Length: 186
Image (cartoon, rainbow, N blue to C red; front, side, top):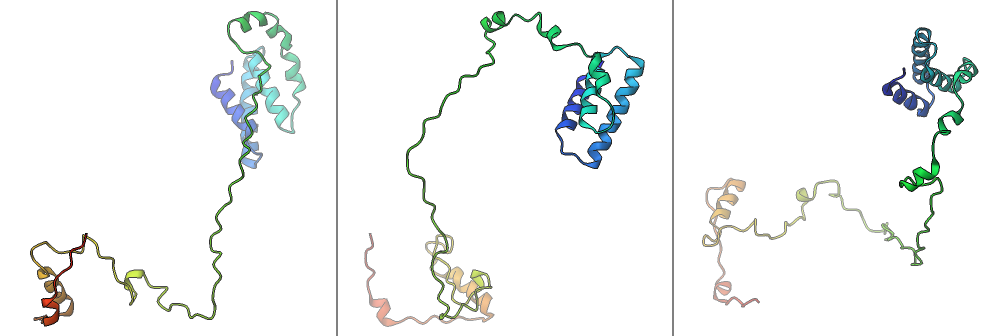
């Protein structure tokens, strides 16, 4: 008797696109089923598998295996359709429900890159460099860049000294800026 693995493999082979590897696997499966059929000549499921395999390939004759299969009416003769429908099994007619048509206007997609290019302007020669390596780049002032609250610039002086390599950094203080009062910002 044919097992579920054989039927799953047959289903997969019949749904795949034809290829040389696919054809070789079909032929190998035909040989397996024929050797099984020699030992069990009255196995109906093997005849059904071979009929399906022969119809999908150009070689072989599926008619000899189809003749052995019982007619479908034997399987459906004992089925009581009204009893099945009363138990909740849906009938073959599926009610079709129409989705409401959405009468809203279709969305207009935003076009990108519609700004005209001005070829009279010269392109930025640093456009290939990363943004932080460009000469005109100024990082945004953020909370991370600020030093500690009470030490005003102590850590920055050490950072500047390490960058420049100088031992002493002089800080010039304007007298006018020292006298100005800070405005209260809200």
